[in-house]
Amino acid sequence: MAILTETAGAIARIQIARPERKNAITAAMYAALADALIAADADPGVQAVLLHGLPEIFTAGNDLEDFLREPPQNDEAPVFRFMTALSGVAKPVVAAVNGAAVGVGTTMLLHCDLVYCADDSRFSLPFVNLGLCPEFGSSLLLPLTAGYRRAAEKLLLGEPASAEEALEMGIVNRILPPAEVLGHARNQCERLARVSPSAVLETKRLMKAGWREDVQRAIREESSAFVRLLGSPEARAAFRAFLERRAPDSAKR
Image (tube, rainbow, N blue to C red; front, side):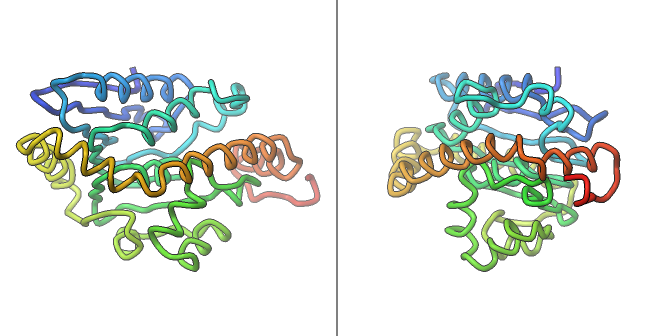
């Protein structure tokens, strides 16, 4: 199973573990992630969620071959169920990032409460390079977090960000040596588990209340545009080029 879950004490751990494909996420994996988040949120014994990948990579983003076989068509698609689950989880989510966080690997971090990364981590939002638009509310949350112009470089040009730049942009809380990231994130979960659960839940609710409806609206609008663009000639050409490991050829669009 490419999504591993474990509940130890008051911490629910969710791991993306598909090393043979650099943790690229399939529809089945999105469904498992959604189910794990919903279960953790409903478990009265869980007070914090720890989300992480492998020591060498967080996730390469969507598995494009699987994505093209099962493109999302409506709100019930696994990827949209995952977005609803993570954006709506009431309990604090702590993410530990090692290596690359591509596409949804970066946008999902905007919905986590605490994010810690390795000094060799790299964050990438290559949607325009694939003929697509931002997703998971990132067109709203990244400008709010990083400022419009910094966000524009990442979303309009697809420029990657180093760990240091991600820290400056507010995507992550702290940079650590690779071997220390997961342990530090777990320690933060343990700290959350030692304080009042009701106070933590209420504090998170209050912090997110001001833009919760805006985020959900952005996710819906992005999802509609994303599905529409997915069938465009530009996207089809970009996907072909990616799968054939070559630069896009505009003449074939």
